[in-house]
Amino acid sequence: MLREQAYDVVIIGGGITALSHAWMAHQRGMRVALLQTGGSIDPGHTGSMLQVGHGPEQQALVQESRRLWLDWAGKAGFQVDTRGLWLLCRDMLETRVAEEFMDSTPAGARRADWLDPTDLDAALPHAAGALHFADEIQLDPSIASEAMTRWLSRAIDYFPHRQVLAVESGRVHTPTGVLKADRIFVAAGQHPWMPQSWNTPWQQYRCRLHVLNVQAAAPQPARPTVLSGLSLTHYATFAQCPSVQSLREQQQAVAPQLARHGMHLIMATGPDGSDILIGDAQAASPAEALVDDQTVDDALVDLAQATLGIQLQVRQRWQGSYLRTNQSSLCTEPVRGVHLVSLAGAASSLAPALANAAFAR
Image (cartoon, rainbow, N blue to C red; front, side, top):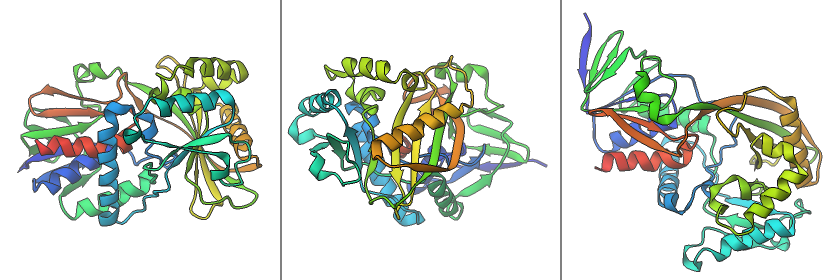
């Protein structure tokens, strides 16, 4: 006989978005069921929150997520790196865009400081300077997810790999019974039970991601996460800078393959300086074919070597994909009490704060 179980909230999903909502609901004293669906988080991830990728309208959310990550790390027992982030500038045009970004922000609200070459370590000989985002944090999403799941499994009703057959207002149907709740949250993903009409607002597509684990001939200094000047045209944060279009044209003329693959450089050095995670290249549009391409990995390595001025040996490669949408974040309610949450690749930086807000109401 099928069972009926009653909760305050039921959460469906297998990633940071679902875990964040489960955590915050539990913190509010609610009876929570988490149906963890889908696979584990891919280890191919540089782990940076990349606050720099979010505009001023989302900075309050990003800062709240940062605060929550530090709190969760202490409780669940995983590491958060607080060394910050350097966005390196290597020529006059990149430096000009960085200066315009600094000048456009009132001193009291600045998210970054400018570092001269003498402020950077000697292993970055080609940099003309850098924007320093001191509040940036880095974590391993797969390790954080495992730690949060262990912690939550002792505090809530946790159903790993539980199949969902259907969801309607107030009810989640599974092969073993029905879970009843006034509030149901579904983290965006490929759910076979989901009606097509629920997915329509997202215009979902798969985005290709390339990440590599490389090793330098000699250990690198402990340094913040490093971005290259390509990030100045990759992120909308810098879109209003007057010189950004000139920089984009320069980049497309010098290295058109980087723009074609939606590529920019992220380098995260491990604690002992021996391993460096570098990424990433992404499909630039829904129409771009997801083709495994060795030349993309080679271009990433060449870019990292040119930035660091050293030779790198590839130890491990990840070529995967993740779900993107036409909007940076989206929460819809297709039927009463059922909330669909899509964060379009920004779960680490937005999910904790949005989950906190969802249960503060």
